[in-house]
Image (cartoon, rainbow, N blue to C red):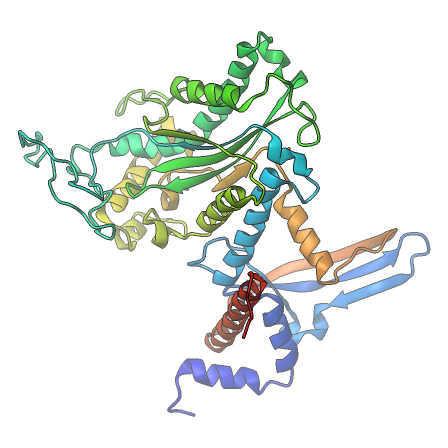
Length: 452
């Protein structure tokens, strides 16, 4: 035993425990979650009329007197099993708003629908992939003595892609403050689209809600330069939402024109700072607006939903922007496994976060996301279903049904999280088995799948 590693010794200890089979059931129920939450407590279900106990559960009967539940982290780099579950929920959430299902009528497929990409403005030239990066006939250098151009043809994996040609010329203050205001700019964009739609048909802007409703789901994505841009599905419904047809004037062309006009019009101003001044932010020059057509197979809608679902599970190490965990000290920035460009953005967050005029932006709290404090995925209320509804549906599917007329009395408390080294090894094996089974099931469901 002394020759075995600590992980192996711990795994053997767990396997020899009399309660190992029940512990393994818990690990399997979490899908092999890498960082499960440990809870202690009880749940009692009573008949609402008679007070009779219908069902009772207490963790005192569990191994270690605790119950393990999923951490539900969306990042694959933090917990791959939970991220796969989150990706699946995201796919169904976005897809339902495109094609119907999950209590959304299939008629939404025939509504005006757009897939829109809004980018961040420029904060300075950065290296690009593809053909010659930034060719300049006259050469030239910036005030810091660095070349203004780059004639290299960078490969897609070149670490220089997204890095500034001159870090001293790059507007790091603007980059960080853009992230802090990107969500507000999106809100103003949505409001302005509604106003432009109303104005285009002679309606009073305040009366738009009486005639139509704008629904959306949007995901924030970090570009190679570590600047957030936005992908959004935008749909036009009648005033009652997905169950209501839009008015006759609510066409794809009219929605497209409104989106393009609003993207170039809206702006947001930063608080004035003696050291930075006031910055006015608009969306970047690159704008992509693509109508989504209702083909018979729905392949385009599936592709959009799959794209969004894939992105929301990416960790910071995959996107090259920030870290997966919060930064609490200046020293954490110096040791973070990031590029020098991202490290400078994090240091800028720390410096600007110490200024009183930016206190409301909480930049130091959001250093790990480079100042961006919005959710990765947000949606309007009427777009489709919710994560909570999808989780409730999954719980019902596995047998956790509600009893009509029953009253539930629950008492729970947090007692820890994570795994011991041996438990982590076993959980990883369970997660791998689940992934293999899922892949096999997906393959067999394809046309011709499972054929010998």
